[in-house]
Length: 352
Ligand code: NAD
Ligand code: DAU
Image (cartoon, rainbow, N blue to C red; front, side, top):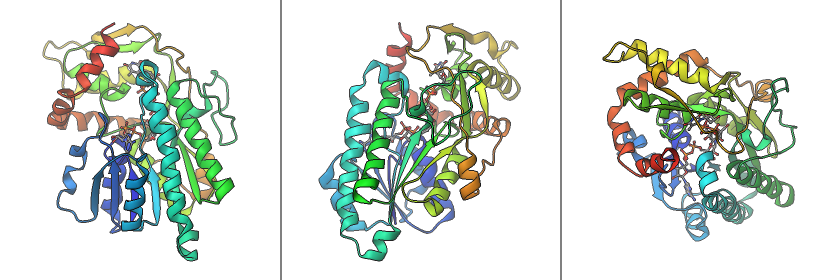
């Protein structure tokens, strides 16, 4: 069995669904169910004995130690985190607690478990830490994309907390020999994406007739990867990655935010035209920029391709069409997410 933390979040739930679609190996899913955790994402697994869900904190060492002893996983995959940059600017405390202290406590519980394993299981064991490209900071327009050798220059409380967690993971390998793998991925998009992030927010706001808030000039660049491609990369790194190594994962899809928003509008104009016949583009509104906003991210994903043979399957064009269609097909999911804590967040972020 594998233990996944944060498996009710956006990427974690996609990973659990994908894993169980192609493997008989069970998943123990430990998730605290913060505002970002949504068990509805995993509704299709109801009654499936291969999915064991436990609501709990990865920073609860006694709980994690008990789960490890009881289920004896061969690997731990750490997706759990506070993940939204804007929230980290409003309130960094949770990011420090979860991403740094939580990861530290998880590492300690895992180390205790791993140290006591029989030699063969010890060698085969893996701790895979899911991280972000944001740890590398920001790029100028002509800079080469982030390679694994780039130095860490995090700029937001979120990216600083992820960078700190990456350093802990690295140190637990170098000092204690824990067989760790770290992945640093670019911006994901796809089904079950919480509509506080750019792509789902634009889709749900457009359909609700609300403004589409573009920060600053909208020329900030992100490198977009369809979430299921991220999941396949993680599976591949777990299978064949070298302990102690880090792997950058990206989609070779650099796009300015404004282009992303316009593409979503064009797709919605085609798939769900506005009643008045006008374009959703008319809802685009420029708002105040994010403080400390990183201008450009881009991933050099050649190492994972060269060493592990992984490449993304989706282009941005195919992935964004699937994503827009998924939101159109799942209005109940959107409605239930919106009727929760999400509404308070929208008020806090855009009420100003
Ligand atoms: P998310 O915010 O959608 O989900 C996070 C999940 O972790 C939620 O289910 C939440 O309940 C859970 N969680 C939070 N604190 C916890 C704790 N202490 N113990 C157990 N569970 C806890 O995040 P996401 O977008 O799915 O991101 C998953 C991981 O991937 C994060 O580590 C993030 O930094 C990283 N990442 C995300 C992206 C992206 O574009 N979303 C890109 C690269 C890397
Ligand atoms: O790069 C990987 C990271 O991508 C992950 O580590 C983070 O967990 C994930 O949230 C994401 O961070 P970003 O800050 O890049 O994603 P977000 O969707 O919040 O914003 C994408 C871009 O769109 C960014 O330049 C800010 C801008 N934006 C965002 C929102 C929510 C807007 O212009 N308007 C908005 O309303």
